[in-house]
Length: 211
Image (cartoon, rainbow, N blue to C red; front, side):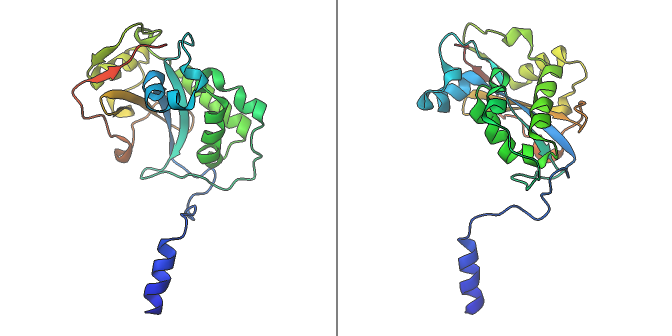
């Protein structure tokens, strides 16, 4: 009986960082690129997010650079590195949409990278610059529907070092959600681990026009 009570209490305790989630100990990265119009419709408009303002012309934003294990991922690691200043986080707004997202990504994922906050933000910028968005999606001026595989094709054409095993397209309902690109710790393309290869199962996805 005492064991059952203890187990019940533990079940109600908040989740804690796994013991194995140590800053700097991971196998590879995922660069997550989020289609801003989809996020705006689902979340951003309700928050009155600046990146959703008409005239901003925001298409893909760097959602984050996520350390990964070959099976699973670390998060909320303890680190001796200082947190970024508000100014440092705000400086990422041009590629991440907001300083708030940059701060959250540092807190959840960046602390696990083993990098300083400045180094982590620079790694996000370098990864995004080395994997440019296809021109066909730049300033998209009308809604389109297309197979997820065509989105992959466009990214591979724009980034010839990418392969189908190294890129994943996700969706939220009928809409394109993210393009996720797997990279080595040196930010070179590599295949995704099986648990990160979860492509959208829809035959077509909606890409709403940029605002």
